[in-house]
Length: 166
Image (cartoon, rainbow, N blue to C red; front, side):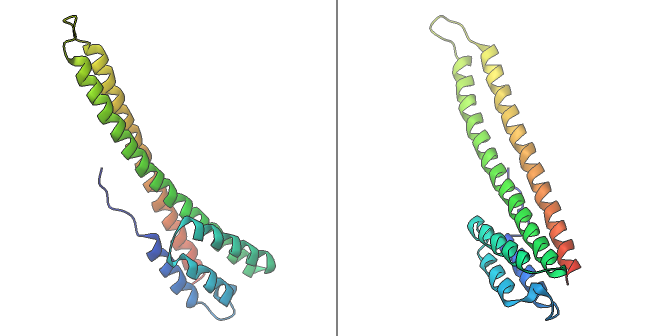
C-alpha cells in the first residue's frame, strides 16, 4: 500500500521555530533556552523529542503564570505530535508484517490445494488460510488509515497551538 506521507516532522518543527522566533521578545516561548531546546528537533528523532519535552516541562515548572502554561502546552503538542507520528510508523510496520504473513499463508494455501499422496486436496484449509491472510491485511490497512488520520488531526492541533501564540 503506497500512500503520500504527511508533512515531514522536520518541516513542522522548522515552522514551529520560525513562528516562535516571530513572537514578542517578552514571550517565554522566545527565551534562548526554549529556542535552543527546540533547535534539537531539527533532527526529529524520538530521543530528541523526549529530551525536548523533558526540558520544556522543567522550564514550565520554573516559569509561573502564562509563560509556564505556554511552555507546558508546547511540550504537550510536541509529545502528542511525536506520539501520532510513531503510531503511523508502527502501523506501517504492521502493514508490512501483515503482507509478509499473507504471502506465507498463500504459500500454505497453495500447498493445501495441491493433491496430496492420498489423492485428495484440502480446499477448505486453503480457503481458510486465504481468508485469514486477507483479514490480516485488511485489519493492518484499517489501523494504518486510522493512525494517519490521527496524525493529520494532531497536525491540525499543532497548527492551532502555533496560531494561538503567533
